[in-house]
Amino acid sequence: MSRRQKYERVEQIVKELGLERCRHTKIGGGFIKGISGGERKRTSIGHEILVDPSLLLLDEPTSGLDSTSANRLLQILQGLAKSGRTIITTIHQPSSRIFHMFDKVLLLSEGHPVYYGKARHSIQYFSCLSFVPEIAMNPAEFLLDLATGQLNDITVPDHLFASRDTPNFEKLVIKYLQHKYKAEVEPKEKEENHQTPKAPEGLQLAIKVKKEWTLSWFEQFGIVFRRTFKERWRDYFDLIRLIQAFGVAILLGLLWWKSSAETEAKLRDQIGLLFYICIFWTSSSIFGAVYVFPFEKMFLVKERKADMYRLSVYYACSTICDMLAHLLYPTFFMSILYFMAGFKRTAECFFLTLSAILLIVITSQGAGELAGAAVMSIKRAGMIASMILMLFLLTGGYYVQHIPKFMQWLKYLSFMYYGFRLLMKVHYTGDELYDCTTNTGCRRLQTSPTFDTVDLSGGMTEVLVLLAMAAAFRLSAYICLRRKISAYHM
Image (cartoon, rainbow, N blue to C red; front, side):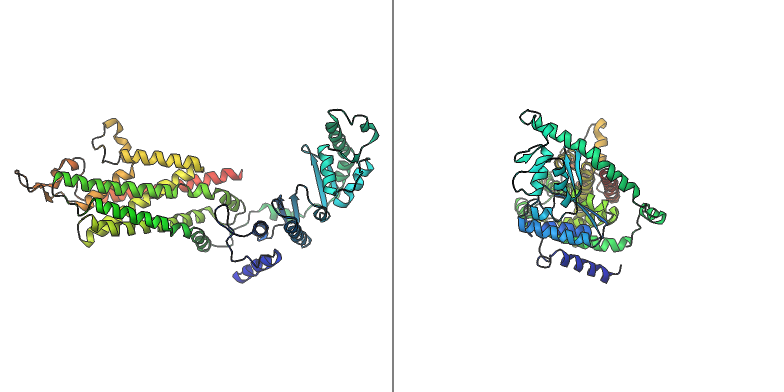
């Protein structure tokens, strides 16, 4: 279909479902006010029929709706059915008006059928079995009473009448109805089904062949990217997040106002600030990314089952959109804090520091995505993220520099360890002099006990490791996501 045909298709469905009034309104949910319940139901149905399915299965589409909205919805479904679709729906206690809209009815009792056939013949069928309402009743209520064995105001066959006051009367009625269905209705249905002509071989082959993608990867990316951004932009440009970044930056700037590295004590304070910046943005990025896939699991599974887009397209759009937000706030944060804290006032040092922090953020986001994709549970994702953060925090190289040999392998798994080392190498060089006011004279920074385990010359190793970790986390997250989504398909 061309783009114009697609838009025309959407317009047709919007008109059929009577959604013109709310076409520019948010659907909403538990925390956001949106369209009404009936409009939400119709939107959900429109979402399904957009690809023109031959069979539409709806589970209680009228639940939670008033009688007017329910009738309106069933009239729409009836019109869709008349246009050539088969619509199967489960409805509990429909009104008499809705009941008479049905073409065929399947009545179940304890998981077994007791009637299947045209809706208008259902009363006649049970009347032939001597089940007749003694008062005027809604046909649906009459059928539900029979299905549950509640036969108040309903006459019963003579051979069951004698057992009417016994405790197991309801079960006797249900078993009798199930037996009658098997004996009288089921054989006729089987005979009709055997007489139905089979689909041509060409059609059967067409059904078996999986549809190929009609849009290229980049075309799908453009569409899903716009949708993802529209869906999440309120979270990206959240006033609370902006206030948090601004407030923390001001607070840290005041606490470390014009700090310096003149003495060992002041150097230690400044390095403490660098490590806190690592902690703050690592935790913010991990917890900002870990809940994305668990929160979107329900609609992602649904849309993947319908083959609406490639999973790789969804993952790329989700990652890139979130990355833009994750990079925005640290930039705003460092623009305030950097100059208040008295770091080196050179453009080179500022941009190198910002780049190092953004690299830490990108890597942390990947770790959060991996944790979320691995468990796909909101409760477990938060727990896993907390464990990862605690582990990387302790092995980051600030609290414990000289880790025992049998535990040293942990620090090589910690991106905070590499990120913290990279920040120190950006800010300090081994040839810088400090502690010049002491009797022993100036010393080189590399001789400070703080840098016992850090060689301040060059930081390309840390950059390469962080880039490799960011790529590995995302690749692993995609593999986990694909496996989880595939498991839900089975």
